[in-house]
Amino acid sequence: MLIVGEILLIAAYFLPTIVAVCRRHPNAVGIGLLNLTLGWTVLGWIGALIWSSTAQPEREGQPRPAIPVPLLGDSARDREVARIRDQMIRR
Image (tube, rainbow, N blue to C red; front, side, top):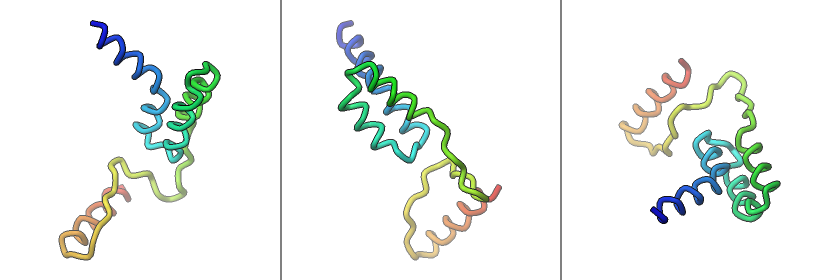
């Protein structure tokens, strides 16, 4: 039971970082560093949480992809995957 409590406390401590990564925040690394270094202060933790939940501006004309986009090579399969991905993004 003690181990479960410790895991929950660690998850609560890194909640701002978890939120930033789940939202694919462009500054997730910075939020994680702020959370790691100053999260022990209440002000640092609250600041990281607010930063991780701020709105991210949409790129004009291009919605953010819902799935991570892998780096593609030059094979026929990779070109087909890129074509399908581009069609999904345009919808």
